[in-house]
Length: 142
Image (spheres, rainbow, N blue to C red):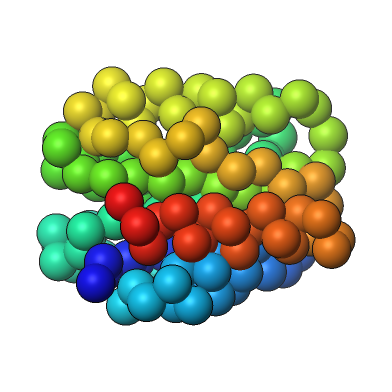
């Protein structure tokens, strides 16, 4: 059974909903899942998990959230070598550049990126909710 931790930041609740749906998918496939807002997580605890999923909405000029998630990810990056890592988030504008840039950073850290990440436009609808659950199922099986 995979141990998965989902660490996210959410301003409007959209990314939180995505995190919860991913957690449901992983749990339904038998993974042991811990889901935390970034302010309640520590970089040290990431070592205890098989899969680490980071979530952030697109902010400003297509960047991850800068006050909490960016410093957390920057601290975690040197410890991600060889780790299975997923990234996800929500956006309201742009074309997903923030997720592509983040994916590059995950790869540069030496982590094994699961897919190319998951971007959801605004609040998850029925179709994107199903994608989130399927992404969680994938995290449970890697």
